[in-house]
Amino acid sequence: MEITAVESVVRGDAHFVAVHTSSGLVGVGQSACWGYPGAVHAVVETFRPYLLGADPNRIEHHWHHLYRMGPFRGSVLTAAVSAIDLALWDLLGKRLEVPVWQLLGGRVRDRIRLHLLLPGTGAQALAEQAAAAVADGFTAVKFDPLPANYGDLSLARLVAETEATTAAVRDTVGPDVDLLIELHRKLTPLQAEAVVPAVGRLHPLLVEDPIQIDSVSSQAEVTRRALGVPMANGERLHTIWEFKELLAQGGAQYVRPDLGLAGGISHARKIAALAESYHAAVVSHNCLGPLLTMASVQLDTAIPNFVTQEYSPLDDTLADGPARACVRRQGGFLPVPEAPGLGVTLDLSDETPLDLTGRPLTRIPYRADGSVAYAV
Image (cartoon, rainbow, N blue to C red; front, side, top):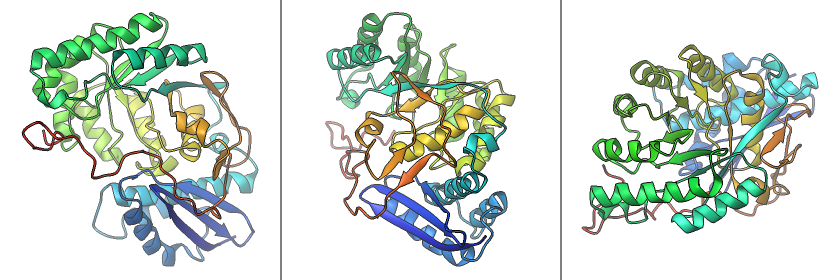
């Protein structure tokens, strides 16, 4: 069996690949660099001459060849490698007629716990959405409690409003539901030093990405100074080498690799093993629809340090879309998939652009003085 064609398509802010083989089997993958899908597509195009005629079963070899073809690194490159890697694992599972998790050592759990991403802002909206999620069977929810005008508030007001919003959700769902607090890289390190302990008093499962991800050392320092609040980082990191530095400098925490960005299954399983050596847990990042959800579930099923899988309402919305999963959500859980490969069918014939993020890149927050709020 050899690779006969590599399809790479951009549909709005979504990027998919399909790897065809001489046996007729087709493996599918998706990247997660949603800001620049056209750039990822261009990188996959440069991969094609190498991949055509290659043995698709040499997954680890192809990963290293593609990653080391040029002396460059970054999210666009690893996203392209991720998409191809997922497609090759999908192919291998289909060829052997087993789900990918079977190839990773077999399952260590019988179902996959989910936490639902809440899209609302403000205490009332988030409390109502959290209550609805719990009524639907979810045992964990994730949300951003920062006020919309966070960039223009005094520190005291920022802390008070963020804590009040988090408290409203906690009061609504009670102590039996885990809260995952997403701060979306909006704070300075000194703001984080005040905000994180405030929400920490409400016993969240984790607090994620309080500061910008430009420096691994800075992220690790915030984790060390979090006063016992469990921290999560890594959705914008790309390699085991970055995760190694994060863990070595910041200690045990929740790691958040995205399988469409951090090297696919081949690399994410190494990140999970690395985290395990630090007694750190894996909560993979995921918000771009069913294909990446199913890829994440393959890993979740086979690793011992999985805690909960990120799940977007988009997965329900796109359940009958171009990428269709072989399993459907059952309350706050997904059953372990039994279909061969990733357990996804992908229809690339529909050229309708997808909107997976709902956010044009040009629409970012500014402070009242006209400066970019993210530039902290």
